Length: 238
Picture 1: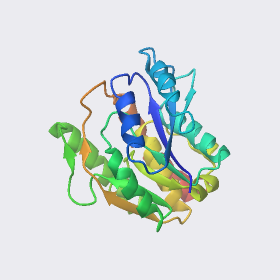
Picture 2 (picture 1 turned 45 degrees about the horizontal axis):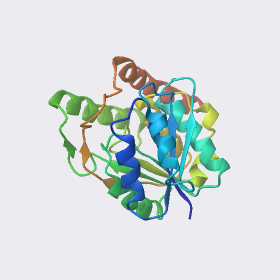
Picture 3 (picture 1 turned 135 degrees about the vertical axis):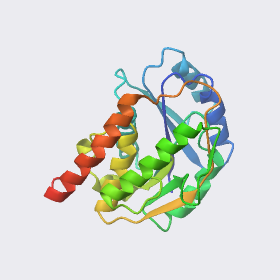
Picture 4 (picture 1 turned 90 degrees about the vertical axis):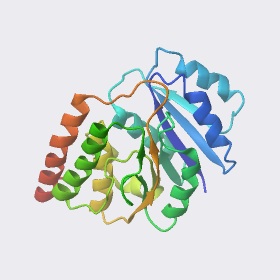
């Protein structure tokens, strides 16, 4: 089975070398696609240097327009399908997701169609987040479950594994949300098509290096994007 880890980047020079080395250090056959949004800090140059060390495992595409996390992942999903990968992972570059949990997501996806690295499936497992951020994130998960009726305790989670058939069935060009709303939309579209979703409890650790991409616009999009998803599902135009 071919396994691809997609890592979107924008100004991640402090983390990218370490995260790539950590994934390949698992020795579990993972390939990596870095989707870089033309980082001005030299992230892409670091990846190019590492490609000489991992010429058959490490790939990169550089997008000229920085237009959201969701668009970066859609770009990566299409690349993965073209290259015939069987399992496609989303993972952050900043070590908020532990690379060693990739194996647990992969195993869970053998008996499901989408596995989710969940911060909230067994209590609240978040390290080094301020209380306000925890309340915002946990409250968002309750809001999403209430509005959409989707039985996923961590719908905004960005550490996931898709089986190929899910991405083939979802019309990726119809996915519109870009930030955390994108994570919700992908799970809801998966759920709406009757695919099985499994949650794997993980410990989420706040980034130590680099800068968070969270902003008010992302939150606004997620709040109103959920209502739009619900409306589309009710009128049959999801």
